[in-house]
Image 1 (cartoon, helix red, strand yellow):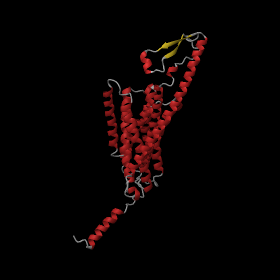
Image 2 (tube, one colour):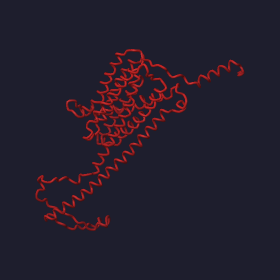
Image 3 (cartoon, rainbow, N blue to C red):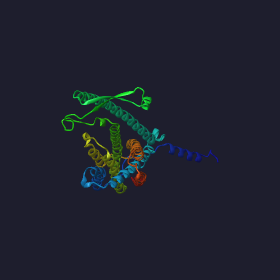
Length: 388
């Protein structure tokens, strides 16, 4: 082939120029009217979001809406599947699409930043959980040490009080040969044997069972509650970021508005169900009894408010602009890292492998049912990703 031909040179030069020059980002959005329907979408999405988020909380607290345990079981694991699918299909893929857009060019086009940011977000969240677990465990051990000291003082005080009243008999107990071999320093042991004194069986004194104070079971429960609360807060944080950009995009969408609107109604309901179920099953302390309601309210309001803002700035907000693509891509990447970690670690590994829910004779059968339900939630939410 004669490469000296000017036509050959011009063709290849044109191809090189076209491939190297980034395309221009859009300078306008696809808004095409239908303002009344867009305003109506604010209230419909608000209702669907609130229904998904509030219903599990109401059902767990009030008898007039209480459902059988199997309904809550289905909602819990279906919602877990929804959250995992949201992380991969509704967050990570759109983030990659936004940050790899041809119109951005430069450094953003040279590296898969969506996956990199997601990875950083995931490991940062893991670090936060490690540090939080260490601090919480240290605080509980310090509290347990204080309780043990108080218990010892109370035991000594009670024994002295009973001895003064002649109600304590002191006797030396010789340990047998095996005990001496195992613990030679304990060749004898002084035992206090007490006879209940006056006023013991009435309620003139508070006879708390000191053996139940600061037990390992209580400490494990406290750590478990703290881990639950931390996981739910991370989950809420990741979902809310995602909801903001969903609402803005819906408000200024064009021909696809009706399809996107219908899909988002179910999207928000399923997402709210997943979040609401986790909020409902968390053991909130009395000092934070309003927190579940506030978290459900925050989720319910985020997308409708974002839609309202999008309608208000419909002439200036351009989803395909450079700034919008970068901000949307970065925040979706961060949210995907949060939800991937929370979904795989807290909702899957913790629930299936480390909890007591699937112990016992019927445990494996129950686990298989939960797994199938979770797959259904994941599959349905992944299917919605075809449109939104």
